[in-house]
Image 1 (cartoon, helix red, strand yellow):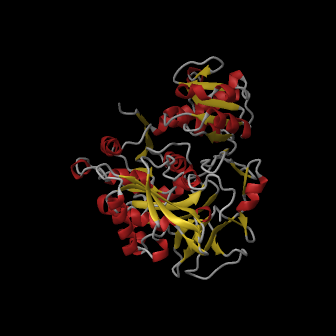
Image 2: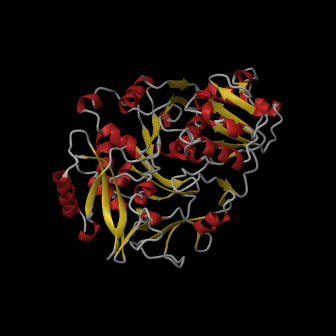
Image 3: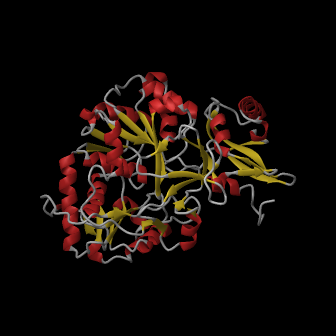
Length: 498
């Protein structure tokens, strides 16, 4: 059964947002109040998000993949005054709801004791809402390395809601889309509780676009939806591209995608062959960004990328980027170091986690998300890997992302993860964990073919010492490998690395 797809006109978003803002006013939620939201990609999510931020409040979306314990933790940690939830997630709401007064709990799509129906919000006026304050969001990191961590700005913005220039998503869409397509149709197929889909959807609405919401990504359904609604822009992640490219050629050629003017992507690394294949298929309309919930950011167009394959671009005009050594000092061009961004006038902190906040600071006034990379002589940033993922074998730094990119070139590989495993002599050795495509056997012959490919395309020290197989590698919805859980299989019973 196909997941629902919702078409929401721009004017409908405005009216629904005004209704939600007035419902918050009526419930006595203060101007700087906080709203936690556990919903799907539905029109109600847009109303809750924009109604919250347009009325000077703080919005925290929650992942539908979180457990009841994680939902309870985040609702308490973000100090929510309001809880909005979808009835399909009711099994995760009991403990979280205890933090919130009954008249400030709203339920979408059904009934649950202690929650007000969404109809209470729809009864409000949809007339334009006077928005005297700019609200904000507090998103939580994915939680792949522990509990989700709230990224909070130390000094929330004052003044009116953001203009087209101030909104990052709108600014990027506006800069790269043809003039006539800016107020077209924006397609959302990734979860709105993630920063990327959220930012670009919000920006498209500010530009006047209608929105199409897919509740679940399906590769062929995405193509059909683009054709059906004549979508002009969308945000995707690399795993979406991989799944699209695996569609049979006849299926890929069945749909008219000519309406697309801009496809933004980010949130996870993309291999050079996959991106090149997508540009050959869809044309030079891919636009890549690099950044995080914490901030920062670089960007690159398809035309630039074709001259600098593998780069994630140059810093955005309002962003200062440096590559720093372990002492926090800038390094020369083409020298690897820690990727760092200036904190600026509105630094973030990880809520209630001063140690984690301190770990993110580096140099004089910079922060890092833990990535390692270098900048070439033309100012383009290339990422090597995350510092936490680096394998150190015999004192040599080995970057899994480079090896994974090579492995993904092999037809038998559906997905892969490279980790460091214990080695008595070298400390760690490189191990490849492979999820095979259907029709390929998990045997020594397949492993030999994979390792032969690595020997032909990588340095000797990068070639995995062995290959293991997995039926399905764990990934988040934004395509990030849950690498820690895979690595831990090999380190069970050890209290330290050798």
